Amino acid sequence: MANRLVRVVAAVIEREQRYLITQRREEAALPGLWEFPGGKVETGETDAEALCREVLYRVGVAVEVAELLSDREHAYDGYGVHLSLYRCSLAPAAEPQALRVQQVRWVGSAEFGDYRFPPADQATMDALLGVKRWP
Image 1: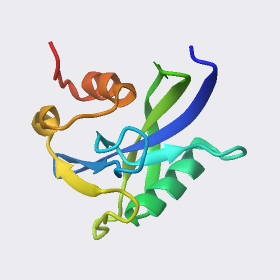
Image 2: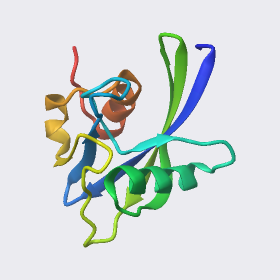
Image 3: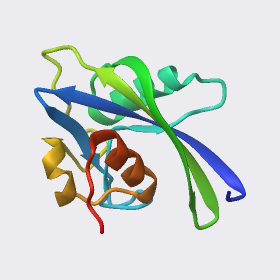
């Protein structure tokens, strides 16, 4: 594993058989790629606290954090990511907005192949949702 390990949490939010994904801003690391909303866990935070803070900050909605779906580590050049995906829910009337992301979309699992995701997210998503994008 790389020298520095970054803890990251992401919310798997489903509504009417569609999943909420966000596009990374151009000035972010891995610009333009898509991911489940979330972000880094700060020192002293629980995963649930970080997830609530990051989703509110990025798309302006509160989430209720449920069970852990997946834990995975991925090595990038010079650092590693420990990604934890949690099933989360929104209030029925909550509408996510692109506040600190480039775009937000609701997509069905069959559409995931149309979007490029960071490597740390891809294998986890594929296993979780039964999606196979690459040969």
